[in-house]
Amino acid sequence: MKKLLTLIAVFIYQYSVAQQPTVGLVQYNVPNTDGYVLYAPMGSFTTYLIDKCGREINQWESTYRPGLSAYLMPDGSFYRSGNTGNTVFNSGGSGGIIEKYDWEGNLIWSYRLSDSTQCQHHDFTVMPNGNLLLIVWALHTTADAIANGRNPAQIGNEFWSERLIEIQPFGANQANIVWEWDVWDHLIQEFDNTKLNYNTVNQHPELININFIGGPPTTADWVHLNSIEYNADLDQGAFKCAWF
Image (cartoon, rainbow, N blue to C red; front, side, top):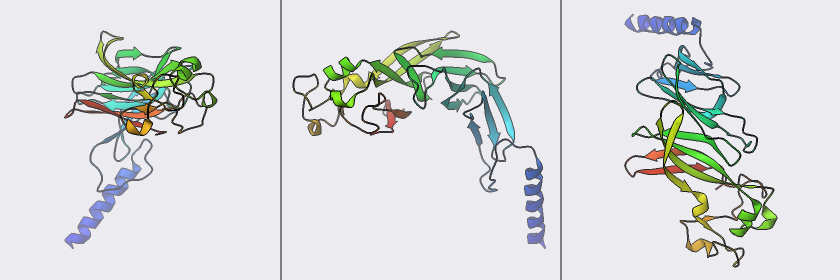
């Protein structure tokens, strides 16, 4: 009889949960009820925090559509990247602005990194010291790329490289750049010995081959970093790339 009562109680609980308004829930797994889900629909200006039953816990409104990353902080504040509609860096994953909101939805800080020569994109991460680690596209001319050893047959009208930067927020919309790592400072090529960075590629795994082809041969976005993490134990940033 105790087993039967337990089954009835579980059924009533599941039925009552299913009848409550939810946001975006398509599947409910009873044992997996801990924690929350934070997500920003691509076509929306709203970011949602829901529980595992799909019930809305909170939401935040932005004037920008999402730039692919959002993080909820222990104090209830919330970081979100936004898509500024950069017309130069218009590949998938384009962002350009980082915003911070408090729990009540008030915008308390923002930082724009989007112009004709650079644009934040895809991911960012919040470090233990409160700084942010960002992925940034950097524009180079075809002449610059060729001078650094890129095969002229494998380049279009422009060439994008990548930078990782650590910023220290201050004020309402400012930040200090306290650290930077640039792909352009770590290149190698064995295509043309009259150009910069010439050496034997397989003898230098610490360097990046400027003639590596992962995506379309003449794409400007030749590295295409997707995500960034910070390893506090090693004090190192680590990134993932779609092409390599």
